[in-house]
Length: 230
Length: 377
Ligand SMILES: Nc1ncnc2c1ncn2[C@@H]1O[C@H](COP(=O)(O)OP(=O)(O)OP(=O)(O)O)[C@@H](O)[C@H]1O
Ligand SMILES: [Mg+2]
Image (cartoon, rainbow over all chains, first blue to last red; front, side):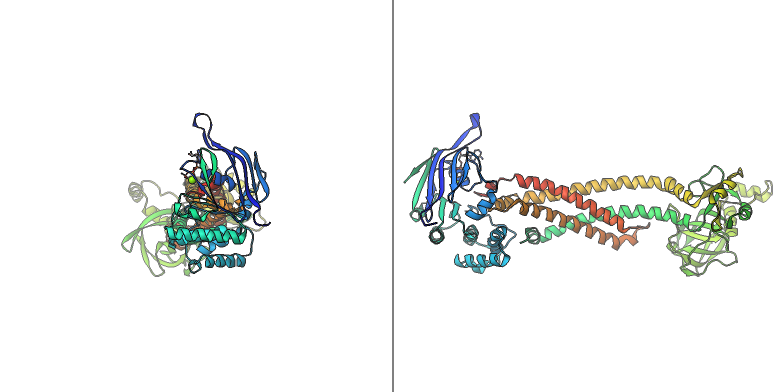
């Protein structure tokens, strides 16, 4: 696929929680297209539906209505069109968590290699890829440590390595820099931009962090369940 | 990459401690099984000791173990003359207390006629009883050793040999003495009034009575015919060896069996609940990690494998520790603890099933976890 292809295509997506008096309209009608190589920020006040939208794109939350296509494949149209959503996530989507959510019983290297292991790659290949990514993110020397022994910034970089391990084309991040100081936050964003460019991937990041706004190609605001682009 | 083992190694100390606790529980379960088996084996040991085919006892009794039985000693001669009988011996059983080395030993005294059925089968140390008076062969558990002497009634007996595994169903270790000595002991220990009467000669001394006459039959002899014939004597009853063993199991061991059986049932239930609880808790603590696994795309197989493997490792370690512990301590129990490989295997099977069921609970919880809970802290 050439750069610039549409990797995420959200059409008329709505999501409401609950029913009757307690009904919450988190998303009313959202349209969004993200192309390969793009790095975009999802902004909006608390409760505006940012996480909801990210979860829908990540195929862990079913919209109430609308369509979703990832990497040219329609995956939701009123209902999920694939029954192996986890395989879809494993192959196409990388998540970077707010709290880094590394598995505490695996070393940094194993956390990264696990993703390839789950995808069925031989162990040696997983280890090599983990080493390569961790070196690239300058945490290679910490590969043998358990997450509890890593600093917040190190753990976040390991989490990024894990999100990238399977070379996904869609990378979703919810407040990836919340735990980092502004200098580190900018470094991480620069890194993500570089990776997006190299791997022809797109990155959608939820953030409140104004210090990194200049690192995005587009800023998208969510307000009352609608998108407002700037 | 085996996540189950990595996770166990991550929290090794806690896991080992949990296995150890479960192991202790398994030790108790195995001990109960062993005690029950030991009870049966001990009870049968005395019945099997004479290695005979037929027991002649008092009419309308299930003697001499389940009920008291007294028959005239000369019944032996009548039985010995019956067709098909190869050898017969009179035998008595009584429990006496005797001071020894500063404590009181409870002894199960078996009187038999040397050279006739009823005596000890295998002397493990020393020799069998000769013809002289006041010798005895003791079970090793009495603590007596050849060369010791011990006072029974009015006389000192010399310990000449040892046997093993001989005791009554109450656990009192056995000693073998000659029938003559046993009968003398019986009179000495009879109620004082009776003895005074006897000394005065007021009442004719009863002909000596024994508990039973045991008989071995000639090869090919009809045991049923023999017992039928014996029963024609109004004051006698006859039991085959198999009947005697059944009576013992039903009457003497049955209550203990039900008691221990019930206790075992409770223990197994408790163990099952504990195992289920541990595994469920282990899974609940990992829910967030399981959500993360789901989010990054791990298939159910990986998650189920994690839970089930840990459950099985826990259960089988507990079983292994329990088995090792009971094998180490079983000889220190006052009663025999007898474990058959079959018992250990059955317990392994039960634990296996319990662990599978318990992990079912955990798996259910894990399957319900929303991968979204991994996001956003
Ligand atoms: N599972 C749920 N059940 C009911 N309501 C929900 C659920 N998840 C989110 N909501 C509601 O939907 C709205 C959007 O929530 P969402 O988490 O997407 O907001 P957000 O923009 O990510 O907020 P924040 O910046 O605080 O993380 C909120 O009003 C929230 O209360
Ligand atoms: Mg949010």
